[in-house]
Amino acid sequence: MITPDNILELIDAFRRSKAMFAAVKLGIFDGARPADCKALTRLLDACVALGLLEKHGEIYVNTPQSDKYLRSDSPDSLTGYIHYSNEALYPMWAHLEDAVREGTPRWNQTFGVEGGIFSGFFRTDEAKRDFLKGMHGFGRLSSPAVAAAFDLGRFHRLIDLGGASGHLAEAVHERYPQIQAQVFDLPEVAQLYPGTIAGDFFTDPLPEADLYSVGRILHDWSDEKIRRLLARIYAALPEGGGLLIAEKLLTPDNVPAHMQSLNMLIGTEGRERSAAEYEALLRATGFSKVESRVTSAYLDALLATR
Image (tube, rainbow, N blue to C red):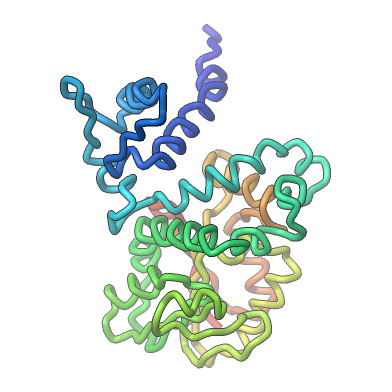
């Protein structure tokens, strides 16, 4: 029997996301109950139905999941990415049809800002903090699995390119204490995270290392820019050095990867790629061995060896 269940669920999906976004924006999971919200109870009851709150009499309290991931002061908080999704991605997705037609990001159409995501998410200090906090929250979910995907015991010094808060570098060092790990990121990011080396990996000399990593970096860029970055990394590595990559690996049935690829369309010049596509780019650069691993976490992993 053919039913419309999947279609009905997709029709409803944006409402569920927006309800959670609004609750986070209003501080509901931090305990706020804004007195000026005339329909607040309706939103609270919706969050109960979504499994984000529990209701005891007239009192609403967080579920354990919400307490861990939706409270802004939690070390595992995802609220930074939720704010970014609500205030940047959600408006841009309204122009997906135009992005598909033109093949270009929607920053200018949505906000009057030229260029892609990098001209947008640092447009204010608040936007920058939300984005970096969001990347940190996702990183805490995925970086341990990426660090565990391969045997990295032969390496001695890791430089995480564009590593922001250092969640991937930290995960590698925790699993391999002998590996010295440090982050290399833009000056405006480095000033927020002590110990970060400031620089632009497209133009500045890369710090010396026998292992570099890039987490959710390559999917931001076109093939041409990826080749340029990979060539710089390859030239900086010693013989036997490696490059650890954390990205979603595109397969025909990987719905999150396809949704993320559309997300990159509206926000960047990049896209998600398959393991074979990444391998082709890496081997064309000169890497002699490329391995890929599908993890159980939000990101998958590749390891390329010079």
